[in-house]
Amino acid sequence: MTSYTDKGEKPARGKFLRFHHVTFWVGNAKQAASFYCDKMGFELLAYKGLETGSREVVSHVIRQDKIILVFQSPLNPGNEEMGEHLIKHGDGVKDIAFQVEDCDFLVKTAMERGAVIMKQPWVEQDSHGRVKYAVIQTVVSVFFISLLWKSTHTVFFPRFLCSPPGGLNFIDHIVGNQPDDQMVPISAWYEKCLMFHRFWSIDDKQIHTQYSALRSIVVTNYEETIKMPINEPAMGKKKSQIQEYVDYNGGPGVQHIALNTTNIIQTIVNLRARGMEFLAAPDTYYDTLRESLKTAKIKVKEDLDRLQELKILVDFDDKGYLLQIFTKPVQDRPTLFLEVIQRNNHFGFGAGNFKSLFEAIEKDQDARGNLTVLTPEGKAKAFY
Image (cartoon, rainbow, N blue to C red; front, side, top):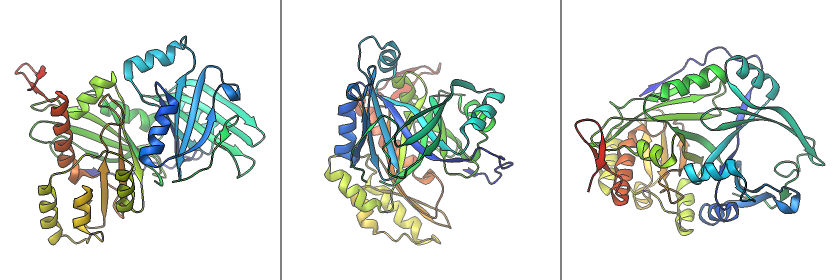
């Protein structure tokens, strides 16, 4: 595992503030939004559709605290772009929106550094205020947003109707999966075009199970408020969960969204009561954890028996620890899932838990019939 301290030169302008929202393209936006409200405790925030004058696309917006998710579906059968996307990728993340201070400068800089600008900056407004947007093409399209609201009492965006807010705390990080040998070029794109820097990395010698492995590089903005881990599969005896994602997603995309909470025990109790399904580590994981913590310089404040009961994972170093748990895929394709994470002065990504996580995912892969064994020629065949 490698942590990086060199942020590079601080950009003179164009500060990245945070993740603003994540947009999903789905087959039925109303039902998808209802699933997250029902299972994850989100609440409806805003709506745009036929009733508000949007004739092509419907949008249902939900929120928990600072987390905003947007679900969009085509309203007409002739929407080829969304239709083809859904056939190929299934329900999943289409856009990641960053809130920034100087949209024009960042778009100009990115374009000068070789980025493809999908839509140059434009402004939309209504009686609540105005918003400047731009779209830059990366693995998935990325919005740059400069919020220019006149009032603090606002809805989501212009021409959206409002619902009461409520709920997890903020987006901790968003993980993208890439095909083999694409991790380094993609991370280099973020460094060059968006002036991000490397924050953390790990290779397949450190993260592997008996059957599969991954490599990962985390890139972030100068203020380190937006973290984007980029994964790629590594060769193993069987198909890795990264490769399974790429196969079923029809290419690269967002693998999981990590949602930060200040009380993971209560959060998971509530989410399990709502019917949310999580991956489960074996009890032997907690036996090993207890032995490791006996000699650790850090003490975990939470009750380990309670963490074991809820199947919450623990990773730590000599400065602090984190608690995390992962849902099962949130759609029929084994692609996107969610993470719930609590940090206690620990800024890693659970490297100590990757092996247990992989083994839990491989168990589900096997149940799906997707755990494969590689032939001597390097080709995958089904493992039954």
